[in-house]
Image (cartoon, rainbow, N blue to C red; front, side, top):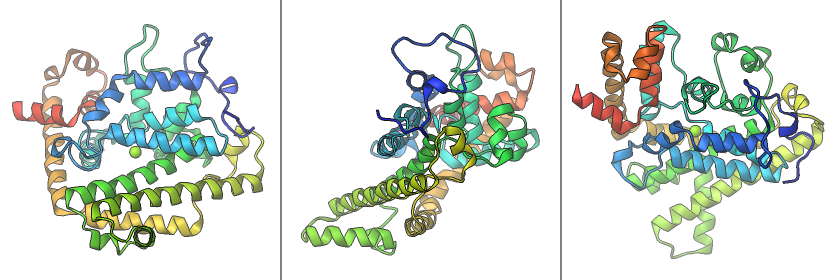
Length: 366
Ligand code: MG
């Protein structure tokens, strides 16, 4: 790993919340990544919805496979830009740990339930998971990750919440940027879901090839594939097209961001934090990505089959929320014991940690 001076450096990390001796063999960002992989929240990602509910089919993305794809893309970009690959990997693997069951529907529903009690943001919840909710260490709650991993995990946050978060919330108040590693993971996240959602949407039959050809970026890449392989079958045509779209987006980010870095010549990560965002797509490509997102919103996320699943999920979360609020003793002992301090938040923590199938089972049982 060849690092540029603007990369995050574990030897100059802003540190962990609780002091720990350094490892002889692994740098601090590697240890962060390893802790995330061994956490129970990470294993539960396997049974959480990305777009399609986990039991709708074995071929669809789950939060876990999504996170692995984000990590793969992030590491590629980090290596190209000579940023710290281990930090990018750690942020990518942890970025969705706070997601509720049933994807965004679950989060919206829980946020509505929590309206009077400070709301619910999955991003903030990811930070709660690594700071508090994981209980694996004798000396502290949470995983005691470095500041840099935590900074990257908290990708957005309301001003209100930022004010209660101490140092980690400061950048939202000062309107500063996180490390380049955190910036690039945000982009990798978008590239991953935009492309795998086309793939899953097409596989499910919800998105048709014909309508995909209305998306300029898709059409452009699909026509190039057809030129090279005139008799290609449709399924392979879609896959080869998605592959090329991803390549185009990732190459564009690397190129545009390299130019940005050359122009502004940051010497340290501290400069990165006060400069404007340097990891970016070119203007044209950013526009293409917006069109792709718009397409997905209209043809996939707002499709009646997906909405039906969504409405179902919202009801399950709402029912469970009031069920446990009314009788906290029905929660597992660890949550019940904590519930005297702030019952709604404890119920939200418990619900957010559930997998799809666990939430469905509990809901059936009651
Ligand atoms: Mg994500």
